[in-house]
Length: 474
Image (cartoon, rainbow, N blue to C red; front, side, top):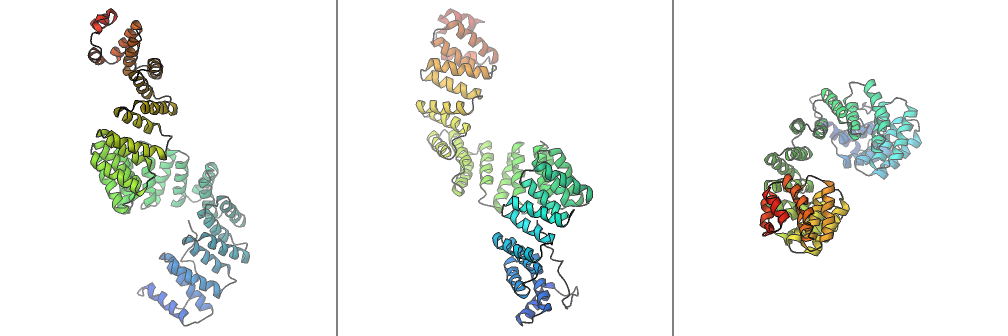
C-alpha cells in the first residue's frame, strides 16, 4: 500500500489543460522546460508533474531521474525527499528510500504522512517492529488517520497479532462502511484467523462495493474452497478470470478445486492454461502431473514431473510423483531411484518411506524393505496398514515373533481390517498355535469372506488339520 497520490501535487504550472490535448504532450513540454535550464518555481512544478506522470505510468527509473533533480532544486523541502523515497521504494531500493524518508523527517518531524510512508518501506523490507513504530507515531501526530490505522492493521496481521488488527479493522468498518478496502482487509484478517464464514461475508461486502476487485473474487474462491463449497469456489475463480484473463494463480487454484472434485479433464486444461502464462511454474507442473497420474496417463505425468524437477531439483514431491508413476508401470528400479532422491531432500515423509518399502519388496530387497517399513511405523505409529505390511513382510522373511507383534499392533489400531487377522492366522499356524489361528481366521472371514478362497489356495492340505477343516466347513 502506498499513500502516494499522483493527483495531489500543486498544479499551478501554466499550461494548456484542454481535454483535447494528450497529457504526454504536456509532459514533453515540461521536459523541454527543464532542458532549457529554466529555474525557479515553474521548474519545480514541472518536475513534480513529470514525477507524478511517471509514477502513474509505473516508469519508476525515469521518475527517479526527475526526483533526484527535484531534491537538487529543493533540498530543504521534506516533500521533495518524500517523493524520491516513494520512487525508490517502488524500485525495491529500500535502504536508499529509508535514507530519503529520514532526511524528510529531519526537515519536518510533525508530518504524519512521512512516518506512514517510511513505515510502508520498512514493512516492504520486513522490518515489522520498526514499521509498526512508525505507524503508531503517525497516529500520535494525527489520531484517527485512516492511512495510519489501515497500515497499522496490516502490519499487525503480518506479525500474527490478529486480535489487535481485527479491533482496528472493525472500528474502521463502522467509521467508513462504504470503504471497500476496509472490508477487503477485514475479510483477509478473518481468513488468517481461520474464521472462514466471517471472511466470506466480508469479501461479499467488498464485492458489493467494488464488483471488479479481482483479488476479492480470487480470495473469495479460496475461502469457499476451504468451506467445501467447491462449485461456488470455481464460479468465484471464473469471475476473477473474467476480470483479468492473465491471472495464472486463479487458473491454478481453479484447477486444484476441479481435481479435488474429480473433474480431471477440466483440471488438466486449467493447469495447461496456467503454464501458458508461467511455463516454469513448478506447482502447476506437479499438479498437472498428479492429474495425469490419476487418469492413468503415466507417460504424460512423468513428462510433467521431469520438467518440475528440471526447474527445481529440490522439489521432492515431483520425484515422489514420478516414482509413483514408474511404480504403477512396474518399473520398480526407476521408482526406487526417484524415491531415494526424494528422501535425500526430505527424510521426514512417511509416505515416501512407505512407497520405497513397497518398491524394495517388489525388487526382492527384503532387508532394505524391512528397514523402510520400520521408518514408516516410527514416523507414523498410528498407521495400521503400515503395521500390517511390516508384519506381513517380517513373516515372509521368517521373523515370526516380530511379525506377530506388528500384526497385533495393526489390529489394535483397526479391529475391522481383515488382512491383518488373515496374516496373523498364517503366522500362528506356522507357530503351531492352531486354535488361535482359527480364531484369527474366523475374524478375517467375517470381515472379508473372499479371504476364504485365498486361504484354501495358499494353504493346500490344511484340511488335514481338524481345527481348520471344521472352520472351512462352517
